[in-house]
Length: 495
Image (cartoon, rainbow, N blue to C red; front, side):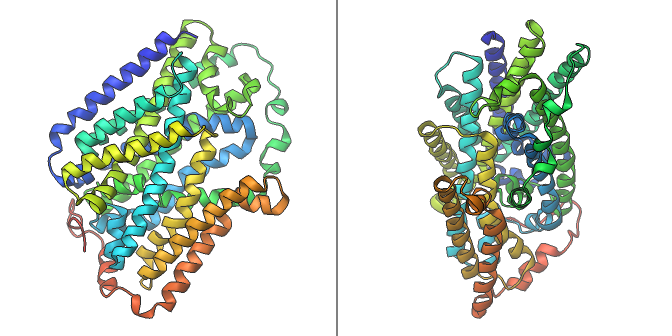
């Protein structure tokens, strides 16, 4: 494998990303520019940016590796990832935009009239964000290490430095163009190789035995009902609790635009998953020998050279490498900008200068975590984040939008119980792996952690009769009142 093409592709991506990012810096002047791009991002552009940041390392590299290892079970992930936006569309996209908030903690404080609830929400958002960034940095280190003789930390540091620089320089307005471009690059980076590989395989006279590629026990009939149902529940509800996804809806001009954006996102994300799933199927035909934990996540990078040896294969590999780094950059930048907004407001006062400092801090913490830890499977690492988000933040947001009786004490109690339950499940999965029904409950805990969190939220809120916010009815009316003037949403920083 020739690393020259791969390094050139990464270098070109870095240059284009820097140019697009810093071109937006001159447009970023106000606090609103940095936090929500002055709420002026139109639907198609915003949908491309959301899709760019949502399609992470776990999708670009990890999906093919998971299907290679697990068979049809791996396809539940793209189904859950894409379908999660249906719930976002139905339940939270427009109401959150009408709230006038900058961040999720902004919304929680305004809805529950509680600084304590805001602080707990901020901690949960930071945990979700940092846990999500770490797999992106691990993936960057893995991808660059496979195609070039560089130290294992080089890819992670490269992504972290570029993300921190662009976010600190221009905030949300600067990264919007970057993320939109990176979605289309990622789609192209898998679509073009997939077409070449399919044409080459169809014309090569290869005799493929479907039963050997996908044994019956690896198909849907062999799936465990509890594990599959719990996984889908985590993916569907976890999407609602991802801070970097939700903050982008605050950039829409109004609630109707937020809904249109979500519909387009479903189309764009679905198209990408169709292509990445095709690469996963090709991987089972071409590279079954890479079905080894630790190697499986590299299979997409290995496919072109195996099917098309020579310059064509090397160029296609370089394109995939560029797309992989686009995935790391887009997701990491979206996470950092959402976390920087939270830290800037809750710790430093919410100025532009504090936003820039917060962006650097919010990149440095997960970079240190990535350098001190060993990478696990990319899809499974991201899946854990979805479970945590679905068990802590998602119930608060859904009930906050749709249930007037929610109180600050109920929200705090629910998030605390959900976080502890997820932590206990993660620890239990390591201690009692493959230990019968108990091990299964720990391996996929969403089916019991989400109902537990929701029950605690509701029971504590119902018991806290005097804790219903004084302005709850008025605030909920604003969330659910259609926009009266085209292009005009709720005012900033609703209170």
